[in-house]
Amino acid sequence: MPLNERDAASAPDPNMLAAFDRDGYVILRDALIPSWREMAADAARRLLESGRTAGRDRSADGKDGFRGIVAMNDTFLPLVANPRVLPTVVALLSPDLRLMSSNLIHLPSIPTGGTRTIRVPFRHGWHRDMSAATRDLGPDRIPRLAIKAAYFLTDSAADAGITMIVPGSHTRTGPVTVPDGAIDPLDAITPDVGPCDAMLFENRTWHAGGLNTSGHPRLAIMMQYGYRWLAPVDDPAPELLRRDELTDVERQLLGAPDRNPDGSVAHEGAGAEPLGEWWQRLTPDPARP
Image (cartoon, rainbow, N blue to C red; front, side):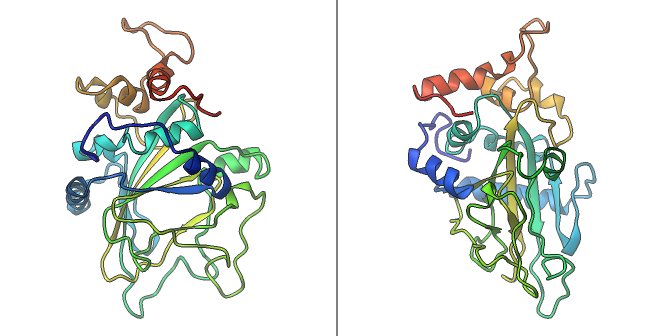
């Protein structure tokens, strides 16, 4: 388990919510326990060393990984409703949520004198998530639609390629400005993420993978939560919903539809009731739209 107790959820810190609204990201300390983090890193390495191609996600500069990892190894399932993270996500969006993606990313270290094809001046890598939504709606009209929780399973020092952020960029209507010959905006930062912390950032926040010069690969897991009416990124995994040990909240986050116990169609939004009831037990404060 990521934490010692499955039911360790508590109402989110108002200061964390205000910081997220201001900066477009926040760090939640001690979101994992060290022993689970070590198990997750081992499970991630086994996946990467396997010959599996389903859900494989390879990209430039030797990046490797998988999408939909919660359906690939039970080790990752507790992240779905991590009680140290979920209250903040619900407060910033609403209970009408689902898990859109669970993404494992393996970022190799850049060898001395190595050639890069990304994170160079002509291809700096700074981006917003959900670019299709921005393209369709327009950069001045795109709302907060989703939040990622980033966990780093290996060294999170500044030279390990931790995800970089431009604070406050979620409110901008245009792209970030990268000076000529540079690869980062002047106001970009590498957040101070501890080994067991989670970094939350939203779809409009400009970010980029840092340069990993640490001498070892960086392993990260990105859990993206969005409204239930958004299309998921991961492949469907209906077998997960047949697991007897799942809670109703986990079933909702894993994509349970609006259905009655007998399988008949329920009223629209019925599938969001588990998280809504969970939130009401957690705090009398309404979740913000």
